[in-house]
Image: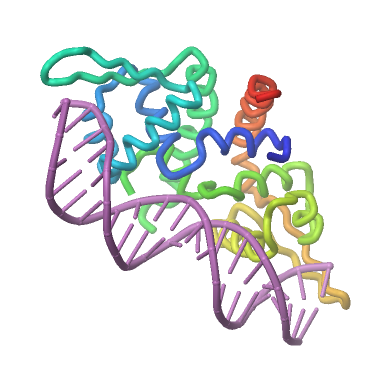
Length: 104
Length: 104
DNA sequence: CAGTATCCGAAATGATACTG
DNA sequence: CAGTATCATTTCGGATACTG
């Protein structure tokens, strides 16, 4: 790694899905299927992989309830919550960008 | 596209390099070789491709001086400058993250 | 429900050589 | 200096089937 802070951030939220997943979790804890339905383009495999990586990087917490049928909840960790300002600025810019490109 | 604002932002700054390139340009106009040296891991091909896409999305401006040897300068467009807050929040979070992971 | 496992094609990225 | 062109390789992502 090169010490560039922007690269450091990308190393954690890089890829097509992680920022989107985190953004869903800003609004609160979500179950696996909730995430899957809410991010309609993602496959189960991708979702699983990205969640595992986010967990490994300590941004999210995975909570397994020992029930049948299984119940697994994902939420932002304290560290993950420090990422919210980044997500918010991305969302805000995205809103304007959506307007700007509307109809193209 | 799904209308998710975070996805909209990723569609423009996604990939491994675009945010890093933009971050370099926040500090001012840069020549091709300056960018190449400043982002040590990037290949010439990647840099060219990413710059072309950023130009297509109107985030940067490419200025060619008709000289020999050639001189090409890249800078943020007005629209690209609206992206600076996103880059800044990414950089700020990245700084903390670099500290946190220092020594691992 | 919340995953894993396997396979495979497509896309992203890299190495290297060449050019106006 | 600022690129292209070409080819090799690596990674990503989708389809499908199976499981505790």
